[in-house]
Length: 104
Image 1 (spheres, rainbow, N blue to C red):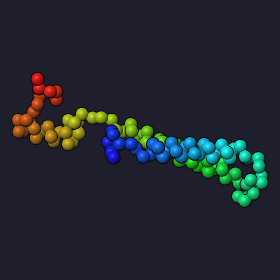
Image 2 (tube, rainbow, N blue to C red; image 1 turned 90 degrees about the vertical axis):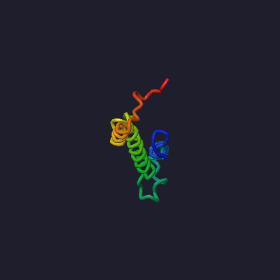
Image 3 (cartoon, rainbow, N blue to C red; image 1 turned 30 degrees about the horizontal axis):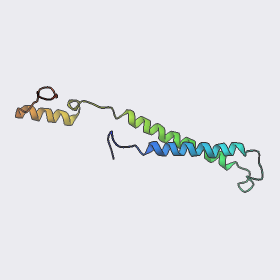
Image 4 (tube, rainbow, N blue to C red; image 1 turned 180 degrees about the vertical axis):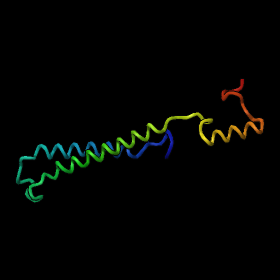
């Protein structure tokens, strides 16, 4: 889906990764002093690092969705190239409605 009614897929993906990253990173912070837990990963707190990576990716997706949403401002049809061409065509054919409102 596209347009104003469509949902930008970056929004739910960004939210999901941000929340999961906070959970995993929080777990990594809470268990940071446990050397036994991270023995298999050579002492690297893998939960903390991957939590930070997921939060960064989620924030990037949310920022991209926010930036795309700001770019979708509504413009008058006459301000677009397609709208200008339509207005010129209607003027040549004498089909102009006058003001865009309903005729009463």
